[in-house]
Amino acid sequence: MTTAAMNQARVFRGDQRIDALSPFDRGHAYGDGLFETLRAHRGQLPWWDAHWARLSRGAQRLRLALPDQDCVREQAAAMLDGADAVLKLILSRGEGGRGYAPPAQARPIWVLSRHPLPPAPPASGLTLRWCDLRLSEQPALAGLKHCNRLEQVLARAEWDDPAIDEGLLRDRAGEVVCATAANVFALIDGQWRTPPLDRCGVAGVCREFLLEIAQARVERLNPEDLQRAEAIFLCNAVRGILPVARLGERQWAPHPALAGLRHRLGAAHPAFVPVAD
Amino acid sequence: MTTAAMNQARVFRGDQRIDALSPFDRGHAYGDGLFETLRAHRGQLPWWDAHWARLSRGAQRLRLALPDQDCVREQAAAMLDGADAVLKLILSRGEGGRGYAPPAQARPIWVLSRHPLPPAPPASGLTLRWCDLRLSEQPALAGLKHCNRLEQVLARAEWDDPAIDEGLLRDRAGEVVCATAANVFALIDGQWRTPPLDRCGVAGVCREFLLEIAQARVERLNPEDLQRAEAIFLCNAVRGILPVARLGERQWAPHPALAGLRHRLGAAHPAFVPVAD
Image (cartoon, rainbow over all chains, first blue to last red; front, top):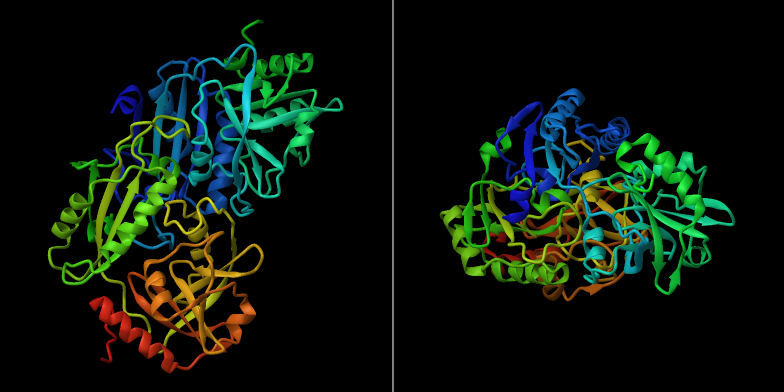
């Protein structure tokens, strides 16, 4: 398989490396797990603490056992070997038999994989579309980066036009939530705003950082709010801030408010230093 | 691992047996797959056609490639080797890199596993509880037996009292949907009724069979409807019809209408011939 050959992966149970995923892994059976996707810069993971904190919060809510943090970090460093890359960590509840009841003593299974950096975003900004699929509302899972991602798979499968960079998702009430693989911020009346994630969506590590930097308000946004925004960007922990140039017929010129945010993001994570600097 | 050792599993890519699941399997990463759980009787799978039909409908909606049916059936027969057992089939989209976009040419990965029969249900009938978790509504996935099952995992984790056999789930509007691993039928005013599954829930193979046999109506049911029902049963393709004896404070004596249904079910699937016959 080409994709697999291009990437590398290691599988662990507890703190032991194992040869392969078990066919009884509950991650495979039920998506019973969590994941993190980290941007590595010269083998370093500047946002490790934020990612681990989110993973821990998710594990607490799903009552998953966590592996030893030092062990995961050591293995990650070994796999990165000084590279600029993307590191993905998938944590599952471990092996089980049939049935949804979580086994009392399952040891967590975790997979570390290393992937090439994504292509640079278009210099002019992203082109977005609206996805038809509406996200369902589940407060028990909202905000978590869990492994039940069929909604995102279906939403991303809605288009294959390479001119479209990302799709925006709404909830069943029509409110904006996020993109398929990024959070969204909008500058409206001079104030940065981003939707709440208490009913659906993933609480991104980059979103969390930018909430503070941008002094953003968490506020419900509908499509009309985005239409009248002075600027829009997407963000995630792999690609940083991604200015939006177009959403349907609406177009945006580069906005000066974004330059300051990108500069401060670059100071916090060297992989995100703006190229023009 | 004890559970794994008790059970058996084989993994395939396309029509080739492979040694193990890939760490890049999208089933593991995103729950990007479907499953079927079949009751085998002396190595036979009387409801094969119904299970395969449901799998095919799900694969069409998720745009998953199906493996060759004859190949799956042949491997299943070999694994069952004449036994009374439970056979589980998990189909995933196959391997991929990072990102939600379904790979254009992924070959499906499928896992067959054999499990012991579940213990016989209590002769007096099941004891049920109401789950706190409310199912989210997602018409794009409703009815499918897909591998995004964190809601069921969380719901099943709500109790560990062995006196409770199953939990009933409601949607966010408070309407009854199903149990964590079974569908539900209620006899109300002499008419069998079962909830629609157009917004959440799994369209069970046994439910489909019984809909016709019981001339049941598909109708929204709320908890009060269940309270006043003359009889309630759960059903699934592994355990057949499971009469309910208790739900909270409400208790039901065995109802004669159930005997006829169980008899007809036993005629269609010999694993479900009532013990008393």
